[in-house]
Length: 227
Image (cartoon, rainbow, N blue to C red; front, side, top):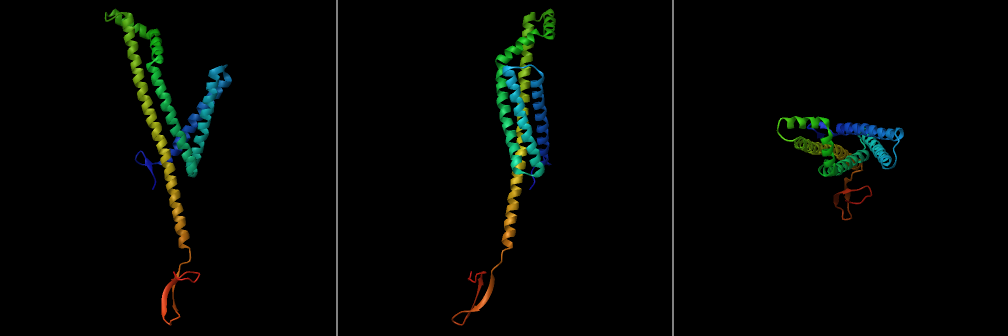
């Protein structure tokens, strides 16, 4: 039985599209990383980071290509390999997302707050509120930046959650297609065994006279032994 997602779309179609998109996206990121490394004068940690990013996304592009080929050729091994990659990406996204959220609520939040207070637009808005007699310029600026940072934190958490859920669902689609291929292989194996059994010689009932002169009926196999 063919499995579907989003009510009616076959999981094979989902695996094909996801593999193609992942291959294109990973390939572009890898190409940009290596282009950045060769055209800019970066050294030390930054250069190492760019190289790692380029290698990782190159590997992702290769595995995604294998996943696309596996979906086209109905190869369970290649499809499951691609599904494993997607689950690994979900874990990495979750870990990096948690780290980013913690950073937003600690040192990163303070840096963002300091940057906000230097923005000309925010300073002008704070001056406007101060002129209106609501608060001093510093107090109005603090309130504005606190509100912006709170909005950024909430938006980031929501976007991160939605992204991880989508990634997890994509991995589930590809894994479902791998399970479908496994079920198809099992059915083909059972069908082949049934055909093999049906082609074997069947025992036939025969009537013979035994040593006592009476007849007996039984089924004998090809070796002449009664079954």
